[in-house]
Length: 293
Image (tube, rainbow, N blue to C red; front, top):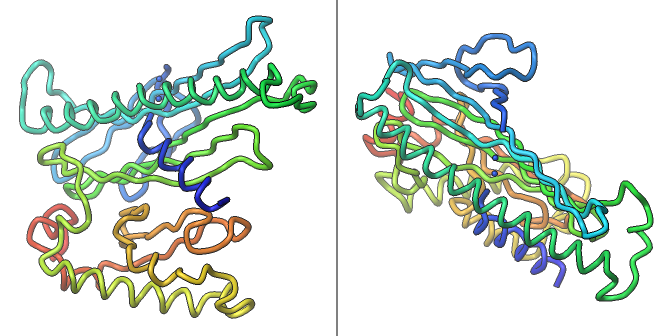
């Protein structure tokens, strides 16, 4: 039941993908970026194959209160924004791509704030003792929360935006997980890994084999063996394409969030798949987006 509960929370949050108000650039992995002294309202300028982009993370903070002004829930979100450098009012292909990506994250913002509303309703019921008195609400600092921080990587023609979630709604601990979405910078469309495959079955099998090899060579496996993983972990590893997939300079990182292939206490498990392993199975579009020869 606990595994199902965690999965339901993650599914609800993904369906409510999320955030909103000062710009705050963070680290840019995989591109040459200036040293950032701290939060700033200036956009970070990056270049991919001659195209200049301005990237900002819009900080959105929201607090929701009970009728007696008791803080019930707070949200903190970073919303990704991309703009073509110097496009002005000209609707170039690059500007249209940026518009499509920004529309995705604008909906993400709205959905996340709606999710915060759902978290607040849970907090309101708990504070009112609807399901029994909870003494934790006697502590002034006790509050439900929902937080998303954002990172990103810009490749030759592929953008990967990575979101780190942490949500607390009254349990023994917060739930944390990662979600990543990749975009074609030519069109602004979200891209799934199998859309980049020339041989999807070959890719699926090759990555699964490598993941199982890494898992069974890991310190966790060495110390605890197969007992440190769920009985059906190999089946879940086989569905790696449905997990959190993060592109960067080094390859594709497959992220298994907590309670996916191992108990919650194990935490997140992630494994890097180098481009050298992926490349034989990729199509021409993937080669162009990732700049592979």
